[in-house]
Length: 494
Image: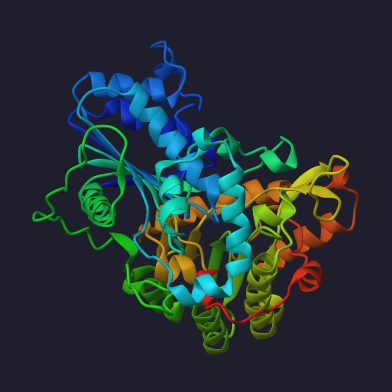
């Protein structure tokens, strides 16, 4: 069994294309976003005259390969853009790919209760009026039904991103598939086009375990009325299950719908991400390296604080964006965005107080000035960190879809791989450090926070075009100025 890390879409997209092309019997895909118009990148795949993912899957299905695809659906009113995008993407594949093809536009079945509709009635009513005034031809079947029978509030989603070929080979990680996600190690595009992500390609028994999880996801979506966009979608037999090996374990978050007048949260069922991380952080002795889009979950931060107190020399390096992409690039200043940033600020302040100079908080940015009017951090365009990676003491690694927030730990459907090969862990750690630190890396010990802090301080002291690598200090004051706390909504929502 082998695990190969894939850093950025420049590595991840071609590997996923080759995986799809290699399928002989079945290709099973589950993604939050998967655009059929996404251009193919692997030269050997393109040599076949294929241009887009729609072309590739059409060829795969034409060969007789069973195709099962779950595209995550979203709230049809409050997340109208994402909901329509999901239906457009799923329909785009369904209109193009012929054969033994089943495609779900797959929601999580949780529907918030009446109390929460009353709490946000003003916003909800505005969004419903906007739907009524929209071109009816642009409405999805779900939105048309909502306008007849009343709103559906879906606070939970399928957030995982993974693919399995023939139950023997897979890719799992944080990377969705569209043009927005494509970037390489140089991150030289416009700030809003940067996207750092990590996935893993795995051959062996782990793939069968992941397929069983995808089958569970599929059946749960069917049970809550997921729309089938191609052939009629049928439940998948899950009686035969392969246990993932000890040194390469499947880690999941999975919840069930739970109704009630005042209910917002689903019924939490599988919280392996939280359990595994708490356990492994509790055993950390020397160093922890984290890349995450969000760090908002108090139990994770509290476990790190306890580890800092227990292990006097424990080093912690965290790489994360200064704000969510909807704040940095879309200008979102609504209360929920501010509250979410406030949750994260609270956790980061805990860590700063516990670790002191043993903590490095890094917000990467391009080594040149941001274009006028674009997003910036310390005058440079941010490199958007979307990866979900944890590496501990060269003995534990985690790559997947789960952020360090309550939503990923307890609500959303998530999948990751936990692995224990020291050479793979060290190799990934070193590759990531070389990307972020560049020449600051040298022959220094990348497990030490002071190495990262020195690079970040050196960079922030000079003009953007004089900086080396991408490392900059996380802008705590900027986060304080943006944050506002409104504690009515449970933290797992964020």
